[in-house]
Image (cartoon, rainbow, N blue to C red; front, top):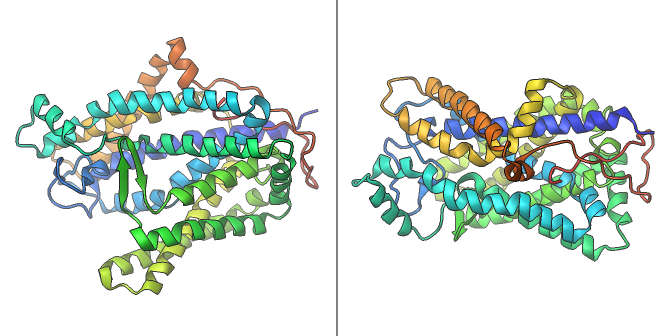
Length: 427
């Protein structure tokens, strides 16, 4: 028999993924109103092309958005990669590497190409128009063609996720016949959660700190349509493959099991997350105030504090979801079904709404809330309509997926359930 906890775990993680999409929309809706931005928009055709991060700069600001966006920047995308990795190994075990990759190219690679090629150019016209001497569409086309790269907006996540999926498929091929190694690691993570998370913390520190010391924490590089934040690719890989290890024998039987160690200690995560964030933001402010004169030791401490705050933020989100997020509601089910499509198309609504509100004499907080609310409604409604097209629904839809069979060689942790593995996000 399957354990009801299996379904509860799946519901909690699905709900968390939907909430993350809402946070992504809120993050982008707030960027035009950050207090630290300059008084002028960023020039479209001049390096370092900072408009890629801040396409619209509004004169009305709200300091609370700076803290909100800094908090999300610490852990949100790392958590997104971890959640994406949770279902990779069961999906590989069920489908094999070839079918798994075929599905991932359909669900990730094709949307990336279409959105970056067609949708992002439409989304970013306001960024050009805000600072251009010639705001005509012809001028925009000329300026776009003069860029040394093809802007991808927030779609950078998709190509990097596809790269880690390729890595997971390669690992599956290398370990053919020895998949029990990954399953045993998954069981060990359940049995020794503190050691496992300490290993994740150490690996992410080794992956992030050296690159951040060499390149800095913020710079990006872009080859064609493929942007990359120089300090974080290895860090994101650690979280993706940590998620793969956690979910290999099913999330209901592993570290994310209802009633497991992570969920039981949600109060500790509730304390650790804000304290570690405060430590990171304090050290970051100190490093930036000293500029190039900041001692190497201080910079290293700042980088290590980032990975601590990242793990604490992810731990709080996961523990809270497992402990409190096992709920069903029609509105939440609709959000989950449309969340991926909302992520794909929301950026156009965000940028154009921020641009439209530029002349409005409203507080930055009000503008940010208006942009978020309108973006949420527009992207949700548009995705629901697009999903009525069968070909679109096959790519961005979210129906009930078959559970992966329980691996026969998976070690059953003491006190663990005998449930089936959860559904794969990419199936």
